[in-house]
Amino acid sequence: MSSPSTPPGPPDRPALQPLPRLIFASRWLQLPLYLGLIVAQALYVVQFWVELVHLVEAAFGNTDALAQLVTSSGYRSNTPLTGLNETIFMRVVRALLDVVMISNLLIMVSVGGYETFVSRMGLESHPDQPEWLSHVNASVLKVKLGTAIIGISSIHLLKTFINAENYTEKVLLWQTVIHIAFLLSALAIALTDRLMVATQRSAEH
Image (cartoon, rainbow, N blue to C red; front, side, top):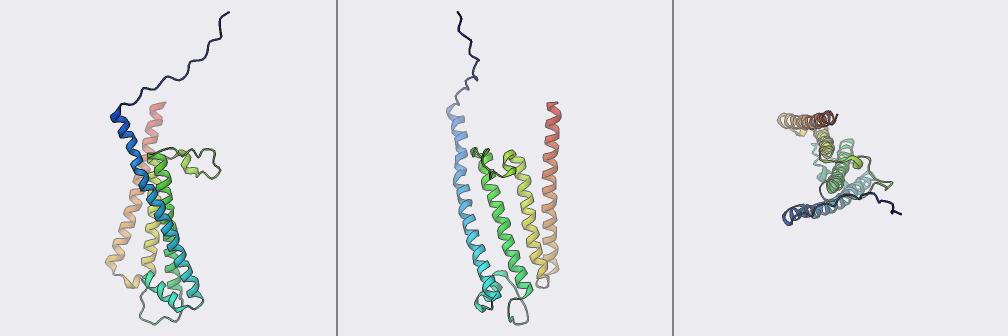
């Protein structure tokens, strides 16, 4: 009586030669970079709360906190300040938004970069896995980073226009031109990625 045949297993992968193995293992050199981004993220959290505490204290009439906000926001005025005004409030809120946007960028780079270039995280069954991480690759990461940079640039441009009287027309013009350049760059990256995906699908069919 013949024994039942067992299905063939996956073919054995050839072992990497020493040089390719070394080159492939060099991806772990990026690990300290992503750990450094985590440290930067923690510092941004501290900065956010320091600015927020100053804003709350200034709203309740603390002159020292108001002076700190004026210095940190770069506010300039020819009239003496008697309290927290709308311009300073908007500039501080803009700065807080700036911190949040840059923090989101740090998370995107550290998580997406580690997943793409270093090692898989194995988050497929985790309930908090970001939706974009399930199909992240170098192209998707570039598009999302471009979008985040546009958001940060928009906030900086808003800061300039809030206090436009303290800037020359040349500064206003160049900041607008740089922002438009970021927009066009992100559109070019997204269009290139779309064309590459369409070409790949056409080749598969």
